Length: 286
Image (cartoon, rainbow, N blue to C red; front, side, top):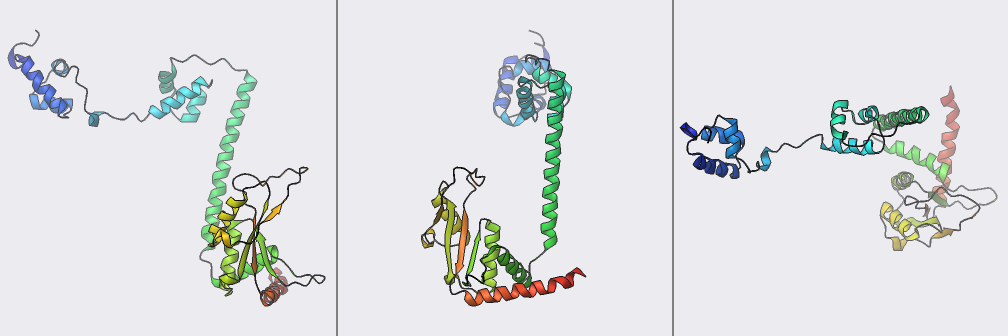
């Protein structure tokens, strides 16, 4: 046996010690230093058949990239396209996919179309990023909303979305209908600022017959903080088969109708506040 003389003469005894250390979780370097084995061939023979401990196994950071590269190659992507998509080198891509069949050569027109689509997808992603950045900056710019800010916002919001009195139909009801949860939250905060007690508010859902009526009631009830059983009878809107509705899907929850009982005096004040705002508008144009 090679190296049978000298410090490696008792090879079997040395192997038993090496295996014991390996199973105790030591690395090759630690075993080499512990047993003073300077020869890599001998060390390989001592540890033959013994797997390394888990802690010495380094995760391959490129495993996910490799898998994705193979998926794209099977879809017919070229090395250039995969490189742009994954941001890795062509040499790595070649190693990962070289056992896969080469994609059929595409017509130049088709390649141009794919390239254009890729550029457009990138453009859309950049636009969306810029859009979100603009929104975030605007939200930050608003700062903390004061009571007066909320008061003015509420008056304008009601006059835009709430029920108005007509000369031919004197009702003076404070009735508000909207499908936007954020608008509802602002409106309720405004009513609270005005001192309107929660007991004066009644709620009702207005929704298409084809929607999830009970789910919508639960959603609005959770938003305003009351039990769904406290809602008034739902107003069901029948679907016209001649029209194509776009307000469909899981996010469609109809509209929430909020009425303030004994609201005639409040309505008159709202109309007065609005007229006061309108009377001052021309001065802001100078």
